[in-house]
Length: 553
Image 1 (tube, rainbow, N blue to C red):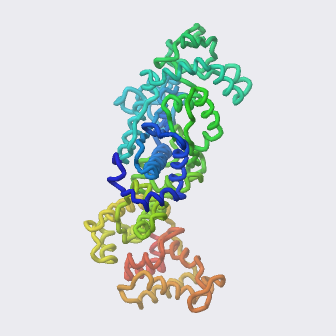
Image 2: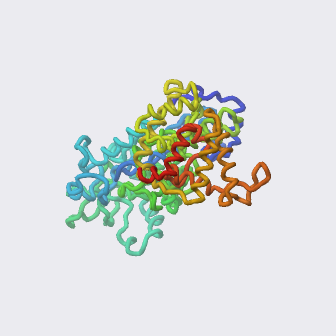
Image 3: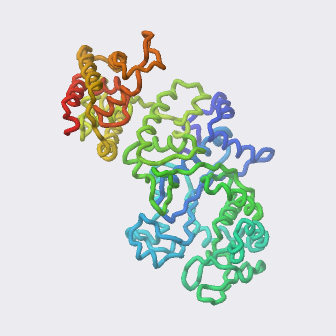
């Protein structure tokens, strides 16, 4: 990301007006920040923040938070004419105690001996490459964010607590301890109220983060007194990394200490947002603007969890699709719950290229609502994609291709002049298509034989295709297939009308083609598929189905 928008986007009056009027959610959020400073000057730097808990491996939800916040940051820079400095802090709560061991990490027996310790004091269970579990997960997060080219400043809670970056506000928290408790206690159950403290001391004896009540809070000396795990009374300063704050007060403390202007978080934090704000205010800060997004769910509809390792990982998505498709998935409907598993990938890929194709033809008002404008910081690339990803998948399925050279044989015949050199993006997608098919489509393929009506329909379709010229395009082939279906009562849809005035064609006809010819429940537009695969090859596929060879194979 460049330091000035002028390098990527000319901020003409037309663009600025379109930004001011845009209903795209990043612009709506950006305008909240502008309104925040209405009637007064902007600070030297407007600060955006995202939070990450390195108790488990980074997952796509973590990436989504950074990507979405970056989109809001970019929208803010546009509507302010790029005249205000901004910064994105990616904050890792790596001083949090390890309360449970993630299911998806190695050396679990070793980790059990370190339960309760700050994540940056738990050994690296992966390879001993890093000084701690927290550091290892932080490195994974940073490597991924760097891979995407995000412009951010990484922040470690351990570093901030131990270096003194939070000391001023921590001392203020000691002074205003009673106010913080008055805010917190009504939110807790009776039993929890009796032992609650906003301060979590780190035991000088065991190194574990302690959830213990305070015996004394000394505002004058900035210390807290409590009983350690062995019953010994201990007094510690709240500064210097000896103490961290409970996670709810920690939100507000961090906002006050760092002057955060905008932070988004998941719906699970929504009920606590007002409490975070109140703590921030008590500690002398102005609460940031919020954006609460819906949660990501796995295939069973369960919330994605770092400790469970359910749902897609970042690397898994990028094994089967380009990065831009993942960014699109994050942009779309952030306030709607989304299932995040492998089935969503092909649609996300094709949607991305569809938006990209539409962009040059749009007026600025619509361009600024187009996801690709936000994905590419206002400068989407010019990419021609003659074959959609879903169609590539079905070409792999029908041709049994295991290398992209086979696919290119079909593609070059379908679109003369299109080669891996002229269309590198399409070449990249052929590799993704083969991987995705091998791992997800092929194992689930189930061919069935046709019944007598379907057999007659397939025979008629094969004969109809034989009458077409070899160079027939997708529209001609689709029309031929529709003509066949209209003549068969089972496939007539009387709720629709054909161009000739007769009944339309039921989707059941094309579902039958997918099931019998491709072994799948869904497929591409038949005419487009047959044009790409070839009439001769499609007729041969139909003949194999009629002979039962696809089931046998």
